[in-house]
Image (cartoon, rainbow, N blue to C red; front, side, top):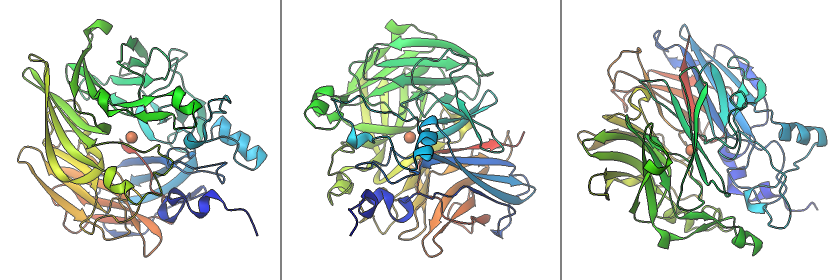
Length: 466
Ligand SMILES: [Fe+2]
């Protein structure tokens, strides 16, 4: 009889959350429908994919990054997947087993061995393809082969971690980002110019040390979100999770004028909540409009989190609009949807500007009775009209983050494609879906059948062919 293993019961190591451990290539994939001739480029998707049976409790955020790429060229599709070959993963490959503890196994008494998993997002900026995880420096990959080039620190200029959610200003081409830390300074802002040179690094006076997953920009401001999830080494020393939920603190929204100094960050208060991902933000007179996927609370570090049947109901996000009145110093909040969803996106050409349309991975009409964040639908919002439409895939067929790809660089905001990875439970494999953005619920333009399943993961981006 063998000892019980984490993968025997942890929902994030089962079904389509289970890792896919083979690296491979698939040429000229089978397609239903027809890939549009004007679609040319590569979709890159990152996600956690533990290479070895975890040492202790496994958290979904722990796994080694694996990049899945789908290259579209002349109406044909090519697949490739590779691990981010971090130094930590190389050590483990030499040992033939896991060597690093996960988030739920950190100890206050032992200095944790730490791995840069680069498992959360993958972005292309300044000619570099960067795999990102918020605890660490970026990892540079080769865009065609997905070979790991190594840790990237902007020619020695970036000291400290980089968020997995940088924002590329569609007008200037600048990449804005930040890093957070449990130690002062808790928050640092950075900006790389369009060529990828790091030109600004600045400490931000954050109200408390918090997990800050994402942020937003407008044409004139950088917006930081500090939620009441607080780094607590005291808790850790008592055997509790590293992050504690302290709703009495409320939530702080920081608005920093672009080009402004540290003192210019203005912190406004709103109700306690948690936000992993804003959808977008823009300036509207003296107000900033900020749409986010908002959680009432976040218990993601609770040891019971992944096994408590009540967990799903407590940990769902809904699209929510904040109007931040900088003249009056107040924040007004309104729900935009009473259904839940995550991974909100807009047309990248509208980042920081008013966008009419937004996209989200949503819970399907059948609901979600699992303990997993499985989203079996894609929802498209018309934020101007206040309406949405939903394309559902059926129970068990989870969709990933939907992306909008314009038909041409100068196409109208809604003129293009919505692309997403969708798991087909019956085939136990994934499809790459290409939908008409103006006909979300109609027949797909093309369904690319991938050679195997792509585990549910985090974020991706489309890089147009050069
Ligand atoms: Fe994220």
